[in-house]
Image 1 (cartoon, rainbow, N blue to C red):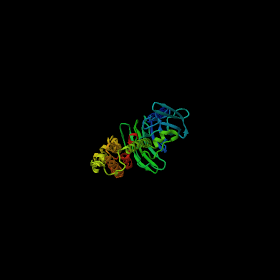
Image 2: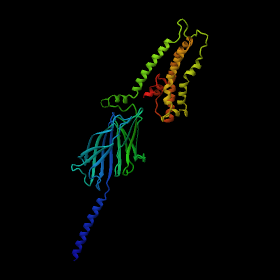
Image 3: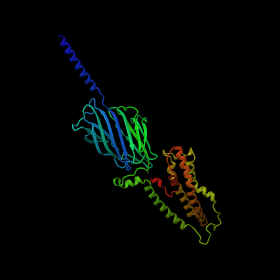
Image 4: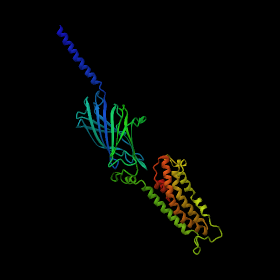
Amino acid sequence: MRPSRLYLIAKLFVYSSLLCVGIARAQTPDQIRTFDSQITVDRDRTLHFEERFEIVNGSGIFDNGFHRQLRIKPISPQRLKVGSFQSVGAKVDGHDAVLRTNEDGNVFDIGIATEAGTLSRDNHVIELGYTAKHQFSIYKNSEDLNQNISGEWPVSIEKATVELNFPGELPKEAGVSADTGTDSHFQFDCVRTNLSSGVRFETTHSLSPGNRIFISASFPHPGYFVSDFKEDGYRAVLQNYPLLLPGLVSLFGSIVLAVAGFIVWRRAPRSLDAPSAVPTDSSPSPSFWREVIRLYRFPMIMFGLAIIPGLNFTYSGHGGPCWFIAPMCFPWVIVRILIKIAKGSEASSRWYKSFFKITIPSYIAIALPLSWAAATSIRVSFGLPISTWTFFAFMVSPFPWWYFS
């Protein structure tokens, strides 16, 4: 009787141990232990992703495979083509994986599994590589890359790292940051490490289900990146040279204005035997400085509004109205002078021609240091990266090219 009891107790102990092990195994939480992403950015804005996931498939959430979902970015005024993903490859535990890709609305789904089409209840290492195109938003003065790097998962991510690498080195004046959380609630709490050819971010806490790590990067344009002419055609030329179209429009407009000015100049009242600077009628000559103030007061006011702190809020980067008015300064001066030459008397026309020859070159020369002062004041006040030469072009262009940029 006694041996039977001992046998029964031993049997119950073994069954209890196996049951506890089974319960413990069944309660092992599914999670992504580590997520590492290495991104290489080409000169043509192509992104090459190399991702590594260490996952725990404890309760079966990954039984039917590991699904990596990537958001497809739509066409917009800042993106000429829809975002795409190519050259997808993956491995599971060091072996080539079975891949299934599918597009559902704005989501590109990559299904990763073993040859059996499943993943066993165990720990696995998923290695995924792919190429992404047309992920940037290209603006007039900058190019932005806003990318959900990790994706949003129904399980937690215990640790995540993201590394951005560029050919050569991180572009100058580039701003790169990383945040964790959701679209509505996020925080910039990643540890940043500057590398010789880029930057690396590492999370400081686990990411709860539904949370992600997000990269925000801004680069000056035009500058570091170059669009591919073979892929994007003439649009690549416009992206690589954003001032080409306004430059051509300005050139054509300037030619038209020059021809009109030449016709007015030649047909203005004149006397061949009278001195060019001495009036032949009895009307007094206009006051030089009074005419300077009358004809140049518009650009004087615009320069003043740009240079004087406090008043230069009209040049802010958030819809400052002066950006739409300043390009009309020099056209306004030229048109006013041509009207004076065309409608004045013979003596008045000669006087304004001389006035034109003196004041126009002087205005262009003085506009350069004033443009430096204006650009510096705007940059200090608002952090707006406007260059001296760009502001100078606003103020001395005979045609308002800004409206076509």
